[in-house]
Amino acid sequence: MNKFGTAILLAGGKSSRMGFDKQQLKVNNILLVEYIINRLYTVFDDIVVVTNNSEHYTNLPCRTVQDEIPGYGPLSGIHIGLKMAKNQYGYVMACDMPYINFDYIAYLKNRMEQVDCDACVTVFNQEWIEPFHGFYSKKLISPIEEYLKSGKRSVFGLLKNFNSIYIEEEIAREYSPNWDLFLNINTKEDLLELETQWSNLNM
Image (cartoon, rainbow, N blue to C red; front, top):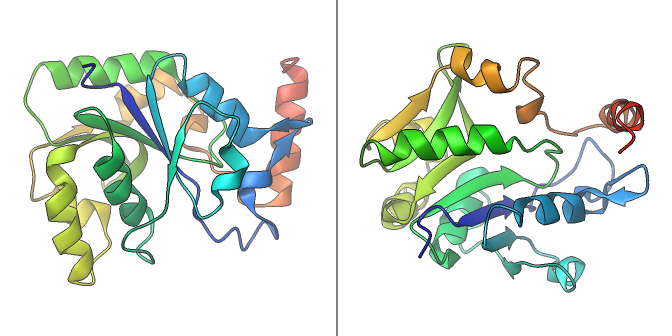
C-alpha cells in the first residue's frame, strides 16, 4: 500500500459567484475536472471525488461519494473522502483549483516521512490555514465527525488539537511564487484570466 496514494477532490461547492456548476468549468474547451483528475492520476493511484453529481465522472479514473455530514464546507468533504480512501493519507484539493505542483507534493511527503503526523497543510500570512493542497490522515475521521456534529467547521480549529505539520508561506512560495497553486476559479473574470494564461502556455 502507498500510504500517500489517495487524492481527494472536493466538488460540492455552491458555485454561487460563477453562476453555474463549477464541475462544468471548461478552460479553452478542456473540462477542468477531467484535466485535474488525469493530472492527479499520474502520482496517485486512488482518486476520490466528493460530489452530488457522480454522472460527471463515469469515464474518469476515480470513485465518487457524497457528503455524509453536509453543510460544513471543506471539512464535510474531507471527512467522507478520508472514509473512502484506500490509503493512510489523502491529498485534498478542490475542483476549481487548476494548478497542481508535483514538486510541492513530493516536498510534503518528504516532510511527513520524517515525523508521525495527522496532517500537513500550508500557512498563509502566518495565521491562515490553506485547507487544500495538503495531506490528512485517516486517523482524523472520527475526530472530524465529532467536530462537525458539534457544529464546528474550522479546519484550523480542528488541526490545532492534533499533530499537524504547518508549512511556512516562505517555503511554499519557493514552489508557487505567485501563490497560484492555491488559486480558486470563483468568477467568470477568473476563468477568462486563466484561459489567457493557458493560451500563452499553449495548454
